[in-house]
Length: 443
Ligand SMILES: [Zn+2]
Image (cartoon, rainbow, N blue to C red; front, top):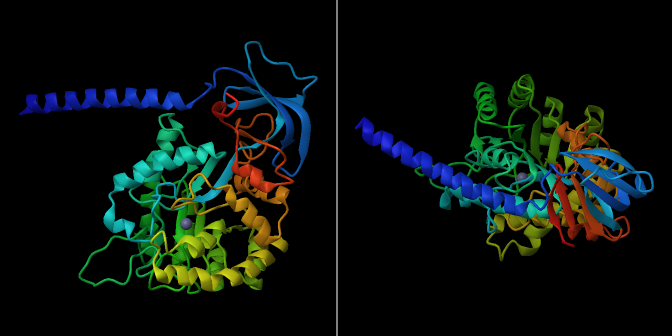
């Protein structure tokens, strides 16, 4: 019996090694330049990420970091450096999407996918979506909910270079109340249906849930503070979770060095989450005057996720999104525009986020145009929301978010000037992440 086991294990081990080699071959295929070679990028205009620009500069990348930036006339290429000529391009820091569901399918029609799919489905979608996202110029993402720790696994395999994709910060499953946005509602009580997140009630249970999520790899905790669009039986303006429950989550996460991000549309649930100390409000659709003041006071961010609501209204029916969700989106649309524009104009911190799910993966940059239209923002502001501000929200501004010496070499380039036409960011010609080139259309 023991020998049989040994043979079985050896066969399994051999299989793993073979699979790993194949994966490795596959992975290196996606990297156009390894980070051990120094690179000198000749840049036309540079959008630094902090609201400033530079022109005719060269950027030297050694290993995974930027080692020098200066006027092209004075910067010398290290010996053996690869020269990348982007002098007819605008060069920017890698973009950062603070709200993705990278493990969601291309045909996600609401909460029913939990009934039709296994955890492995999410893992495989993640591999496909991660590459699309990276090639679209997004070198960092914050994932805001995934089942079966599929986002944890994807984050780790991307970090190991096995799967091409953006640098990931993940929440694993969201925490939500019984009957709320993370639950699946409207069915017979005889059917035991798993949630779209982790369904947990009560401060003690939430404390344990936070510890469990952190134990299995969560970088931050996502909590559902109000009803949502893609769930039945809950209203977007009703709070979910009591103040005590919200505090328990934020306190426990804080003890473990984790920030909390809160899904909130309605004003009351939003304010309760901000008072409890969350770092960001996801969506923030119906934020009121008191909420705006509170968020400014606490330095909490809104991640507005605008594009997805328009998509649900316009294409929801053909993509199989349930009628109740489309109806919720329509009812909220105008109110949301007024509320979020006011918050943006009055100085609440905003960070770029799309809620990328369904077929939004790789189209993340379309959010910029909607931000400008909805929030009354300027192109430079929304670029900053997707670089400097996003990095600050994640707590990694010392490593990323602007093009500066000593930071990770996350660098993208587009033809033309996105400050004149923001939609140019939808066509990225060059993508470098941590010194490795993943896309260079001239090549
Ligand atoms: Zn979301």
